[in-house]
Image 1 (cartoon, rainbow, N blue to C red):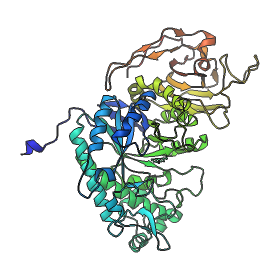
Image 2: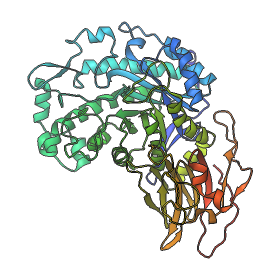
Image 3: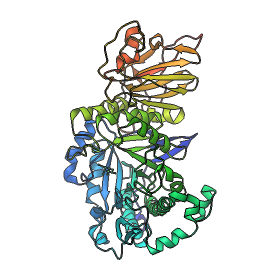
Image 4: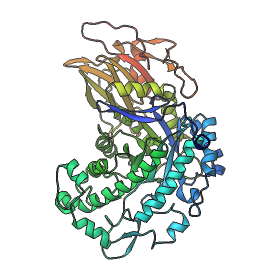
Length: 547
Ligand code: DGJ
């Protein structure tokens, strides 16, 4: 009997997230994997939509599709499950050589219960919502209801069990339980039961983690309402995630509406109060050990805000993953910034032509697609190598700021400078030649990511940027005096192919004019292995690190 019901034993190792020395990697098929993702539109979760989805995913050179699975489509009638959507999706993903991240639209989608089945939505008595401070029913299902949790959990567990049965080779690599949780317009549930809990002490696990005890107000002061909602929402999702992982132990993450890091009132009840926003990250880490990542959705065009959000969310206990990035051209440069902050993946949102969320994101134009496709095309063949090297070595990233000014950062003993809107022929600030304004000067483009492979050796990828190196007080500001090789990576094997990284370049770029990084990158994307010239040392031809 047992033998008949046991699931297929998978030979493929389970995807997992590993952390070492503050850096993170997503392992897929046993080796690091960089998600070059595309998220489909919210209503593309039907087999009839897939013919519109795959061409865009292919065109953008994505290796992963993020796509919803809605509770209302899986359990349209209570206890009756319909898996036809994932049954259609998973084989097509395999055939397209693309991995999947499934987005569970359960109790909450952009905080509301819009994807709950009708039988849940229609029964507010059994499946209650939060109450507002003045006693009105709020639009958000309450995380304090056991009925809400049990019903959602049962459906999620059924889904995870089914995926285990139909996906032994782990086409599905991660799962996002719920979507952008929290509550707009009311910072928490103010029902009688919620108020009773709120007046009591914070739970012991949380007090231990924070090293503070007392009531919610004593511990969190003006952030008390938000912290209370964060704790109960995170506990709810953690219980669902744990039950799902008991069926199929895939890494799980939540996507997050994040506050502006410059907002002095962040965490005080505004925005999606209770989500895993950066002011609440410690609360979430204590409450939800089965959720590996709190992942920021990025719809800010402003460099200061994006850089600040990445800085807050990329932590030793929280890998950076960008599950949604606006798909308009100005967002594309943040791909480099995210990689430089050690991201395990980046995924523009709305990567099928069935709809457009402009002006939040972009219109479905060839220019917008190309802004992402050019970068993904460059990185796709070396995505696993990049992920492995970035797991083992320090990384740093740049994206053009709002004023396009020069930026610099220190990596080991090198100061690295990024300049934008530059021509070849050296430092754009040099006065020896009058240079016309570069057309990219005022465009929101440009960025780079670097991995420091050895003290004086870097792997550098970028677009529309000029990178130069300085060491101590010695300027190595003439990048072309140093050997670099550029070319393209040629491994084009099937998914999971472990052929070692092989670098081919049809020529060695040492000629001063042409080798300036600006030349190769002003209009197109470039990737180089770059060995800086050690003082007193000599340049040597590159050896390519093995991934
Ligand atoms: C963030 C949500 O997570 C997405 O599902 C989508 O609704 C976008 N906002 C807006 O298009």
